[in-house]
Amino acid sequence: MSNLATTFWRSEKLEEAEKLEQEVLKVRTEAFGMSHPDTIQAMSYLAATLSRGGKFEEAEKLEQEVLKVRTEAFGLSHPNTIQAMSNLATTFSRGGKLGEAEKLEQE
Image: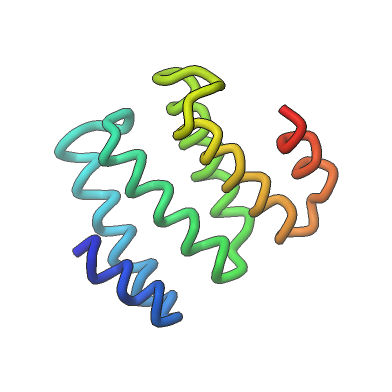
């Protein structure tokens, strides 16, 4: 399912990708819990799709959760945490929240 969602995303079929990614996130949350790396990755993919589709507020919420969990699990200097910060900053910027994006990018 996750691979098909990625194919949809790359093909700009964002609605289809979003639906599949929501299902993947639901299944992984039920199977592994919210803080499992596979669940967090699914959350990150869904957030990217939402952001790309202009659903910035929804994307921000998911990306903030991804950042929180990755910071707790890995610390601020881990590449996964830094990527989560970058993703959130990009969504802030695309959504017109330039001050928040700049602040996050300076961390």
